[in-house]
Image 1 (cartoon, rainbow, N blue to C red):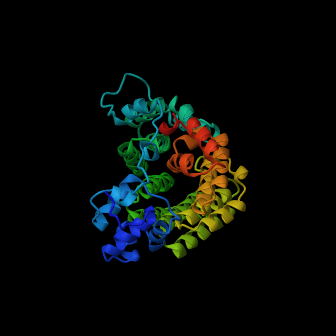
Image 2: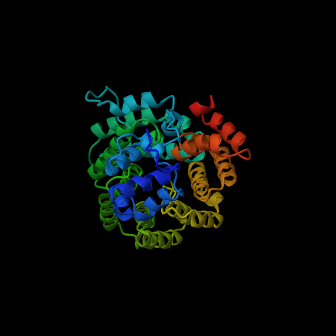
Image 3: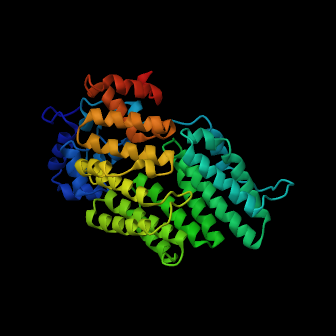
Length: 405
């Protein structure tokens, strides 16, 4: 049970046990894989209670045996930390986990046809408000076709098929994101990079680096390794000579900016964000499936500010971007959620729930699987006050939160 003399708030309890351990805020942040600003945000309540894995890490660092000593009266509910699973996820997981050693008696899909099918799947992913349901109907067959083609084709056609296979693994990673399959998400990132390397395709390796950065950043792991990987991949490109290389080089700058922001290195984050912006403004149009462009770079400034625990800057950046200019429902919904995260940091629940509802209207699938959304909606159902409680409960039912049943 919590000690009698510990503060009532979660942040106050963290500070109490940090002081008790004789540990500086800087060291505590570093041991958690975060920054001093993050630790300060936790302690002063600007950042809410983190996920269960981080709570356990914090307890180990500070020598706290019982998590209830951290959480106090703030309940750890299944709804707060559970991940929703799409109804087709088990079938796709089985497909990903299979190793087709015996090739069926059939002709391979040509490299051209395979690339066209993958391009169509990307259009479905970015264009459908229920993108997981839409892409789940084609993903297993795409995986089968690409694996068979890679086994049967030779030379340049095989390399092109490997490039398509890497993109299919990217789609699988996106499909599985925020679902209870962490080992498969790691596997898709690794397999995509392996396929890109086997294809000897610098563009494919750069794209795989972007998606691997997402895997590691979301897990709070490999900060230096993921930044170094982005540097390496960037050196393989020719951004001054090739439009697609310029897109991918800018995307890698954005990956580094996001990683630096996640670890509290504001100056480095802003430098690479500026580089990404310059690359984006030099493009004629968005990248066709990665959606890299000026609108995407501007929108990620909100995420960077939120990761740096600066809610006011996050919402200021949100006011200056035109999300309608981003040609992807999934991205528009995601970036709307990120603006909501900024308002949540500012303790403005009315704006937070309004933006989450707006994001739901853009893409229900994006919101239903977003962990920030699920956590904050669960919180606002009980702590948001009369102005937002009913809206939070309505949204909770829409995204199938267990606590709304």
